[in-house]
Length: 196
Image (cartoon, rainbow, N blue to C red; front, side):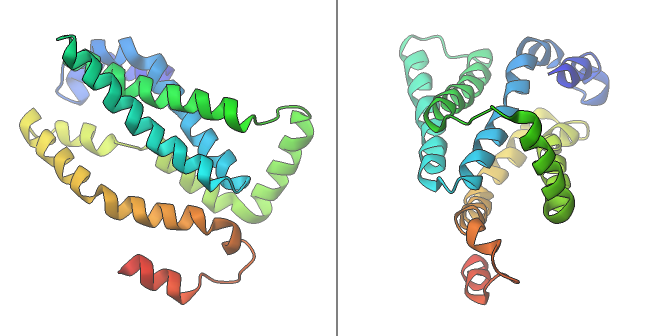
């Protein structure tokens, strides 16, 4: 939230865009998007793939419902569109957190175990996840420094069209993740299905 708030003051120079006030307005909501990563990690670690699926569908469903309600009220604007999208993510995250009920007791002991395990097994995975989360959707912002808003829109449309391809691969890896941890290598059939 603080990073987005700070960048908002340089948006006009860095991004050649006038979205600075919007970034400041929604910086707290953008920051809360990190909860989504927590929820996904809890569901993956606890092998609650059904809950994760419901979470992903719920985000889209809440988003569509809110858009329809605002359209019917005749109050759908750019500001509302951004707000609706962020609130859909946060609402679905809060509901799933209440459903999954992660425990935070013994946090110090759990963090010590986590740090040890990350050093042994998942350091590269962890760094990749942090880099992925930190750089999510920065491509659109960087492109906006070199192209006009219409071309950025076309770029985002192209990204939307290819989204199912990446989503399938990600869903497949999440579903099979627990089995992968017990195997020395990813089975050939998984690679072939993913390639197809």
